[in-house]
Image (cartoon, rainbow, N blue to C red):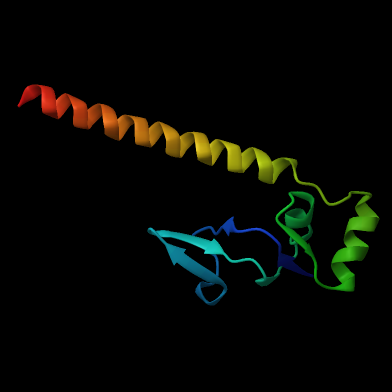
Length: 101
């Protein structure tokens, strides 16, 4: 079963290196990457990919699920909040250093 990524998605430690790109020490699946796996249909439901073969389309129909985006949007919001928190923390640490000098 195959899917094609329509959005950038973080890759886990077991993801094949030939399918991923690395940025700032993190591995990602790039838009357009075709991924094959037994649970690939879940990436479509999560909003990260679209079906890339008939097997995936049939699996979605069999399960009665439709492509979604809620999981992807929630993940993106959490990651943005995480980055903002880290930026705030860096600023706070920098200000504390300046006060101590």
